[in-house]
Length: 122
Image: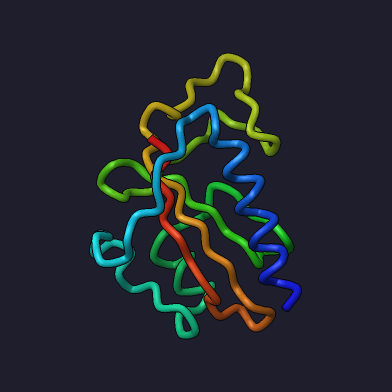
């Protein structure tokens, strides 16, 4: 399944990129907040996710993979001070100190959620 390979590759990149942020654990699904409880693998559509959570922090593989950076209360953190390559823009404050989780979502070709993980990065 090609999307599964893409997801594994994206997660590997995510783990490498988060090494400086001390990636600690994958948060068990039963411990997640009601803000993301609507996510159901095999059922939830990308349009519903974007309607409920807003624009993702990062998009990969032509919107097959969405990443939301979230605070401790699982609220989406806006990183407007970051450009497309995750570099700080000059003279704009960033909010990296507020990021505690990355919500990684992988969708199939029809826009249905295949799998998701909430990664604790701080």
